[in-house]
Length: 258
Image (cartoon, rainbow, N blue to C red; front, top):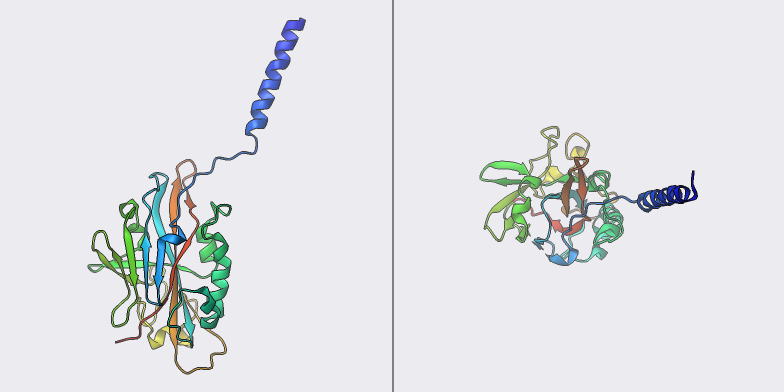
């Protein structure tokens, strides 16, 4: 091999090595935008306003998912805006919040599988009912709600609702019965009924979305629901879901039966 050919050969090898080293170990991550925690305005213990950003590109964005969990308590808190009250309400509520909090508005804990995070802590999917039709919230919170404002209302003397302030649609909130597997007591509504907090029904086959409180000393029973929201997208290369970081919608006090 001549000196010129030898130099050319070595140049090509160096160029190829540089290309390989320049790309080795780097992965392209798809990114979807969360609902920033600053876009959520909670009020006392019964209401929260969520301003949905309009900046999520479709694709990869697909929909928003809402996770919830219900907590039994013997404490009546006039306001749940501050997390300082969570341990007094129920230690599991505080533990769940403290585990999820590092992900809220995080710029480093991105692309975490939110299903694994929330399902692993006993959370369930929120369902919505409109005009007699019940569907998982995912089917409503699609790109159609980008830029909209949602109001969650747990005021007494009515079933809790989610209102799309842009369209005026009012959805009744429903609990997740795992496609009929769970025999929810007394029903799927978010209401502080005796059967909801009865320890006899808090198990894997009945009220699996409820967590009891140990060592309660006061006679009255209350129930609170923590709701979190995250954006979901689809990686069109792998057909797997990707997630934004979550945000806390609010910790709501469930209304008593009327």
